[in-house]
Structure formats: structure tokens, C-alpha cells
Image 1 (cartoon, helix red, strand yellow):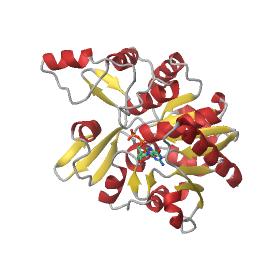
Image 2 (cartoon, helix red, strand yellow):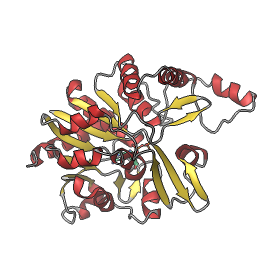
Image 3 (tube, protein in one colour):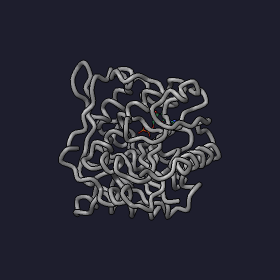
Image 4 (cartoon, helix red, strand yellow):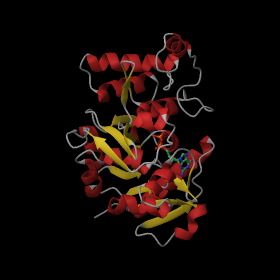
Amino acid sequence: MSVVALCGGIGGAKLALGLYHALPAADLTLIGNTGDDFTHLGFSISPDLDTVCYTLSGLADQVRGWGRGDESWNFMEGVRQLGGPDWFNLGDRDLALHALRSDALRRGESLTEITARIAGQMGITARLLPMSDDPVRTVIATPDGWLAFQEYFVRDRCAPKVVGVRYEGAEAALANPAALAALADPATEAIIICPSNPVLSIDPILSVPGIRAALAKATAPVVAVSPLIGGLAVKGPTAEIMREMGLGATAASVCAHYGDILNGFVLDEADAAEHGALPVATSVTRTLMTTLDDRIALARFTLEFARDLGKRP
Ligand code: GDP
């Protein structure tokens, strides 16, 4: 079953790992968010693509929730000793990836090519595509002004109120042609929107011209999995941001936010009461992914649901 999934970092990568186990690797294409990308200390950093790579390759840290396991922190210690900024942690092994990517970008390689090479080196056999090779930068409007995404997310620990979000560069960005082709491919049988933050991880992808239209035109059913369970995020500021932006913070509001690009929506058991009141086909299951088996079970459930929905006319 040929499948395309849109995903951000932590929550997205969890379901991506389930899909990776549930499908033959060659059948899975992941479209990753690059709105969180930024340059720090001269390095080009792609946090969501890296989270997906570390998760699929088994290199991710299981406790910290970001970065690699098997990590050391000599670089950060050196930065601190020299009075450099230490609000964004870069592990030594993680830094190797950023250094290689930065060097390749400077030599004119595209982010798509670099990502494919790095994923291949990590042994990942699914296809991971950045949404675009052009820079798109998520910036956050707060009552005190605009913040670059990582200033909001990491430096200020999501504390500022979010009153708006912009995806800078999106209008001029070219969608990844391979991503557009995968979405339009008649052989694609399901398009999954992973349980990622709709505003910070999925909307940047949808903001790249052509991607939303490709989802709307695809013959494959588009199914989203709710990142909110009982009105709460499993991790991160999804509920707060959606509430602060006036979108509501329930599974139903996530479904409404995606609007008519969706054919199906997977809700958690905790939100079963919303089942039936939504404008698309819904299916209820346990969506909390604690173990690898949970990830695989949710992936299988979502694929089965998409298969039952069938191709769109
Ligand atoms: P980020 O880019 O690292 O913030 O990661 P994502 O945007 O991909 O993921 C953040 C979202 O994942 C949050 O809204 C979480 O509620 C959601 N999430 C994390 N773990 C789970 C889980 O086990 N089940 C579900 N349904 N959502 C999850």
C-alpha cells in the first residue's frame, strides 16, 4: 500500500515510525516540515527532519525526547566557556549532521539531496522529503512582537502568548516536486496527516504553494490523526496555541482547522463523544503512542480506515 504522510517532529515521527514498520519501506514517502529550520552558530539546522531521521533509524534519545541517544556535550561546554549562546543544545554527534548539512548546502546541494543521503547513511529506506528546498520560516506573533520560531519554542519555552503565525518565504517557495508527484500519483492509496501540531508543523507544509491543492486533488483519501487527546496535547504547546489563536482546542477543532482537505479523521477514545458530530468520516481508537507496538497499531488502524474510505472520485 503506497502511502504519503505529512509530519512534523515528535508526534509526527511517532506515527511515521509506526507506518515505517507497518508498510514495506519502499511504499512510504514522508513530507517533512522545514518551517522550524534555522541557522545557529553558523549551522543549518532542520529539527523536524532530524527528529524523523533519528526516530526511524533508532538513534533517537528515548528519555530526553529530542536529539540522539548516545550523545555527549563537549561542544556545548566549549561554547559556554567561550561565552557563546547556550539556549539551543547541540550534542556532539548531532552537530556532525548539522556540519555536514551546512557544508553541503554551501556547496550548492539541495536540502532534498542532503536529507536523502543522511537518511540513507542512517539506514532509513523510506523516502523523506523536505516540503521545499527553499527556506520557509515560521515566525510567531506575540503581544510583545515577532519571535523567530526557535526563540519562541526553545529559548522562551513556549511561554509567550501566540496571537498569530506567519510562514515567511512560503509564497515564493517551490514545493518539493517529488512531494507533489507522490501526492498526485494514482498509485498512492492513502495520505496521512500525522498527529503533529497543526499550526506549527502541518500548516507550514500546507502553506507552500501547490501542496494544499495537491491534497485537495489527490485521488487518495486524506486522513488526519488528532494530536489532541481530551483537549490536551501529549507534549508541547498545541492546545495552548490553538486556544490562543481562537481555533479551539479539541479534536473537533483540529478537524475543522484542516477543513475540506480531509476525508477522514482519527479520534482518541477519550474524544469518542465528538464521533459523528464531525463533517468527515471518523474512526475512534486509542491514539496515545507509548510503546513501539502502540505506534504500529495506530499506523495499521489508520491505514485500514483509509483503505475502507477508498479512492476519491
Ligand atoms: P514538534 O515539531 O517536535 O513539536 O512535533 P509535532 O508537531 O510533530 O508533534 C507535536 C504534537 O504531537 C503535539 O500536539 C502532541 O499532542 C502530539 N503527540 C505527541 N505524542 C502523541 C501521541 O502519542 N498520540 C497523539 N495522538 N498525539 C501525540
